[in-house]
Length: 244
Figure 1 (cartoon, one colour):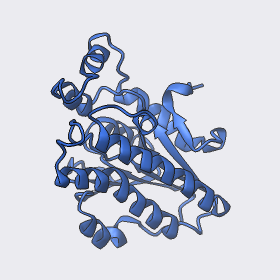
Figure 2 (cartoon, helix red, strand yellow; figure 1 turned 180 degrees about the vertical axis):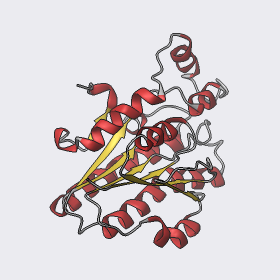
Figure 3 (tube, one colour; figure 1 turned 120 degrees about the horizontal axis):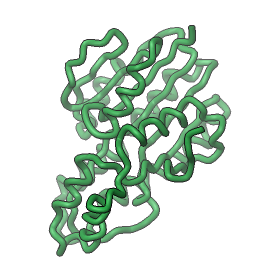
């Protein structure tokens, strides 16, 4: 039976939790799930790592504990953890907040991708890195300076990594999950309209049932990860492909 490994960040809620639930339904997939807090789930295939990914020194200290050795036929990394940051215009941002968003949304995924590529370069089977980006990586929104910038950086890093790692058999994706009904959307709707001019539009997404469910998006991400050969481009958007 094929032995698989999934390393997933931000697994305790929202999209990350839906991805976790999808992979927990499989019999032979070992899961390393990383978040600040844990779910305390008792499952033979799950190991939770309690780690604040915005603390880069702590992340570096834990790297040796995140990547298990084993005879894996398939390895997958999903950098899902992220934060919208302060929904405020430039001039009202706080240095600490800028640092936290960049650490969590960009620098931690870069560090984990680098370590993942090093740890599993010799694996002969499927090797997939999926960085959860956003449509905001390619579309500036007033009030989202931290978020747009961090996700744009992640999209570019993913494209560079895809070029560099292709000869070693890795597939790298920067995936926009669309507008998902999660706590982050609730945070966005709680913003001050003077800081976020698009507030009414984001409220209307919820009111008109235009938000995708986390489970629906997780199923599409699962398909991407397990059928990576069907997706030749690095930049992907779940709204552009349908399940068979």
